[in-house]
Image (cartoon, rainbow, N blue to C red; front, side):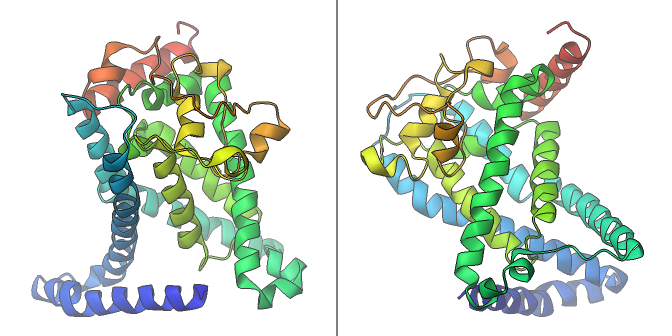
Length: 315
């Protein structure tokens, strides 16, 4: 099944490139950029798929049973700008160029040492015939890494200076998942990519892994009064479970419910809050005004100032 999805996506990308982008490059005399253009098209299409899947799942839920209704949704529109820039705009292109170069150098370095990066399938040959099981194991391992990345965002003062932009939102919706400072986005991408390389995630499975985490994270931020029940909330992060994490009394190092997918990590490390009917107000009471109501550019500039203050001990 995973191979079929990967092949269908690759076929569509190739068809779109051959019938739309390649003729345009030829007409403009830019065929020297064809390989780069194909890679960027692939990256941008994947971002579009993420946005469409998230919207199709989360928007009906938010309309069905919202936690809050607001007369003015300007700050929500700012979060939409974050999503579009993060998934479809210039930021993914920069990330792609940087990480593609870093990955090539890393693989070259390992090859010079005669080292082959292991994968689960190589260590446990049985998994080669059970791709879905291997995929689920990678999901669990990556989620463990994401739990500790999130803990560090709250416990390190300089990282919290950036991450609090995400927590400053008082009108939390599915779009809030992408409300992050650019530097924070880069740090998260480095963490996630390095961890994926460390555990040997196959390149073909990586996009689907990202899509799964992206969907659950966006759903967990959705403005919907939804709990998965006494048992379900111990198996998968719900909107209620994660809203408790964004509550005004659960910020910085006092946070709860750090898990991205599986609450088991919060249970193991003592950071779980399972109050089933608890839908607190969201936001960071200590966030500067720019973090709360500023536009994208203003929030980015304020984040850099606050980061600098934290690094020199003034914040």
